[in-house]
Image 1 (cartoon, helix red, strand yellow):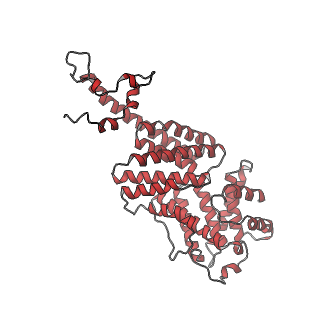
Image 2 (cartoon, rainbow, N blue to C red):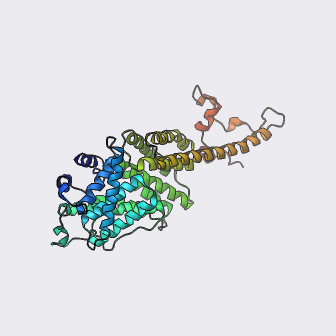
Image 3 (cartoon, rainbow, N blue to C red):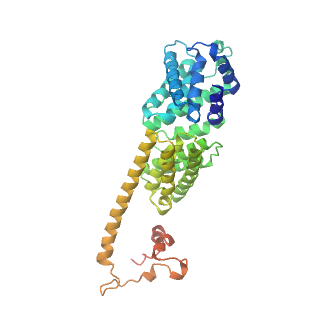
Length: 399
């Protein structure tokens, strides 16, 4: 258990800091003398379950046994008239574990239960100077005001994002007090993306700019930043307004960063959920943007998804890989249909060598061959002169 706790604090703690390492190790040492229903067991079993995800050395049956005991401990907590913060943290760890391993519905239900526990223990408000919460034995007395803020912040963020992902309602307790300057940024961005809010293209691009300005240090948080940017792009598409070139460039840049981070984390066996989520979401966005710049990135995304499928091979990853392949095939089919439409026109009307060839000269439209690279052929013309550039010139003013 000490070894699993060390893995937890090396992998999870840098991203979500709501536990005190010394207090946890002390609780581990004392756990042999505690009954199974002791509040601290909810925390220790949750820590162990998450650590198993990042460890290759644990026996195959250990994780299942830990999860069984953790679930029993949490079910017992729902029968208590007065739960403790340990029980809240146990549910928070459960939500994290399900976010890694499970489907949306059980994860969302667990996150809602977590928020109700927070309301019950009033973790979201300023505690009284002599709160009776600290009189309960366990890890209870080790939760400083800063850790309590982090517990609430992490729980609220998870409930928000899971609700958005699943299209369900989120839970926001009344009279929320716990906020810090650092936490407000991610929360504000997440809150701004509430599906019930009608945002203009300008407002969404402002959110995108704020997302770009974030400088998180941990790779998992960088992937979260990328995921927020991809969500912003999807919202921009829904508005029906043209997405600015500047915004698209920012999306592509964050996508490049995200795919590099996801690949590195996958190779290091760091199975954060965004390692799979970001590449798949990025693939959808790249196909939707549908430009030379976006489509040239598809191969790299597929390489990362194939790496994930080979490395982990879980049911969720296999389904994601199959969905990605289907999306690509659909895009290829559409491109082929588009090609056939234009190819038919070329065959019927663009016979330049015939007597009926149009009198207009391509020399008036296409660049001089001396301006092209030495090894350029006809295939370079599209790269040399994009359609947007052609449409922005005055070549059609005489019409």
